[in-house]
Length: 416
Image (cartoon, rainbow, N blue to C red; front, side):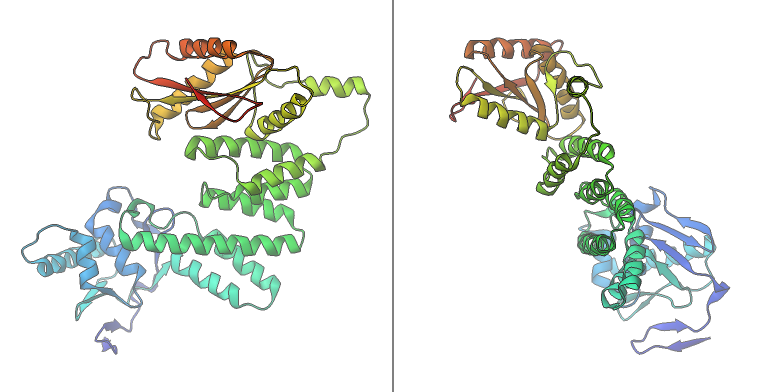
């Protein structure tokens, strides 16, 4: 039994089978009909069948124009009769859906140059549900109910929108829109949780957000919660792990917000009463006995550098700052990837083996290490460079190292 809708779209008044097609767009593409997976593997995610379903299911309310559908399905390929080719893809998709267990109806319909999904097969899409919850939360006046809706919306976002198709224009636009929406949602949720001093829930929110949207600085939410809860050991470990992750993946230093939290952490740490001898013993204690230079995180290195600068005011010391950087045979920085990561680790080992225990070392970015050399001479810096190169180039000749050395007392840099 059928009836005509206003736009000429054919709607089925009967819901065949009483089921709902569950559609996942966040973190990957997958379909589920009455508890049974319909599609979602890597191969199907790269097919015209999947491209068609993604478009029609996501824009099921207003439909998909024939021009957009043809651009997505065929790109710049020269097709003799592209309209006929599109109809064939739609026809075969309907056959495939029936074979997969969906009702025996035309799930995908074409009317007047627009492609629709039939009303006979209800759809529940995670992206649409996420958007609905965010909108509802924004209009909610009761703060407790608003928090519930925001939390539900946050957990509906399980990753980037259709991450395998980020090169497709419409997908990229929607992915950016949902990413911005998720960002606003997390910030609003975090604000409500902080008002209630619910820092345990804030910690869980930060962990979830960082997993759902990696490298977006959500670790600051978790760290703020840990500092507020007094869980300083976990906060320090999170900071070190985050700094290492961002350096390794993007070559970035900690964000200003992360640095602020790290300094606040240092200010809030409290210790029980102890004798001076015990305090000294703990101050000197190193969990991992290091040979060679003292390897530390960038903020610790920054603090040491500033302290040395203050000591320089008394004079009598010669201090140098050295930057060691991996480059290719032509002197250009290497591209991101596994090779650069491997060489960064090799440079770390070479530097630590080549400097004294009193010298301070930190990773500055991919393929880069900073070394603070205290009580040394310019000639000694040359010797250290040769040691680093000797350790680094053992068995490898296609790469190169570039060194920059500055006296801590002056600003002009010298390249060697």
